[in-house]
Image (tube, rainbow, N blue to C red; front, side, top):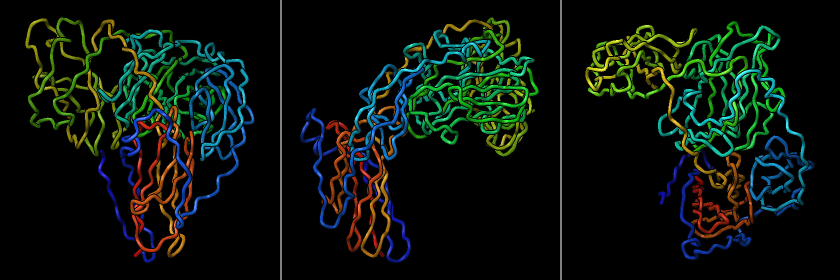
Length: 543
């Protein structure tokens, strides 16, 4: 069980000091009563607490429709979420088809009357507009078509149902970057080219990044080269209707007078930039909600001008003896790599991506493989050596390491650079000619419904009066586990119970009239008696 903690901060006279820390505690009721029946709460308020009156049930959505694998509806003012297809969601859309009923749900769990969806024609004209390479991920040999860059063990690709790439990111704070081996080739017409990505990556608190850059970088980081086209779609980019886990189509259209970004055919951003290059690598970066074990799905990628991968290579990841880039003469740890992938091959390349510190000379970067030194050159032009920039480098492995005889290991394996200054190796691997035989494993099942995230704070209203504000946020969830409501305890005694049968979230404000200092706990009660109860602890102190 997570220990309960308090944090106290002093502020002014006649002030209320607040500390909200989310902890998990096992529900006493769940331990005593292993029942499968949904938990139900009864409204209660102590004489020093006032809860706002329950409003009338919310109104229904004004319109509901389904198309392109999504059920969407007009947002209902004041609704905390919606019920559709047997699920609770926070955003006004969900993955689905047909003519399901949709109900609005308010902060007290009250439902509106249902509205049935109408079916609208699907739009597949974008497929013809690509005019080049289109990947629907029916082929599970991902390495043949892409290089996937991400933290090993924290970025795990898999094959989902219906021919879909699923990237499982259980560590909760990672980005995966796909570099297509098929390049973008521009045309001489008014529309120079386009890249299409069908994904759920840009959902609430997630991010989709499309980078187009000459060369073959694996990552561009936060500071792309000056001649790159850098497109970011996240919560700051309208329209905001992108529900968690719902696929949308994003198109980056390059024209002779600028760049247009479309979502499901609607323009959401423009730029006057016109690329001066004729060929570029396409990098697709996807990020799930920060600090939340995530999952991103990609249903299709289209790239104009190209009709398939150019080179076939087999990749072998290499782990450097230290992830810190060393100075040229600095002592290296005695950790090496197996030479087996290099035995008897006609050629080999070493690729590495480095994040820079506050100095260093990338032109002097070399990889040390045993006694051999492999000079590394940038894989992209116009890169920046600014702090926290990322650069992919390439080096040809010398012929003496490709023979069938010689040592079984190459020790050490490190990267070196003059003035390294805290530069870090983000990834490194070998490429040798050949056809990859690595197939994707089946992706994990869709994650189960999760509880909304609860936060609470106390705001002073007077010498003895305070407002306890409780917010339940479910925007990040693909589907929400229904809640029974919440309880408020003051000095371990029950002070209020607010029922929310089948609730999804919302905002509540309670007025507390008390003298002196007190401990306050808010417990979120799930409907499922087997789930743990979330608690927020606060200290109310007057000085």
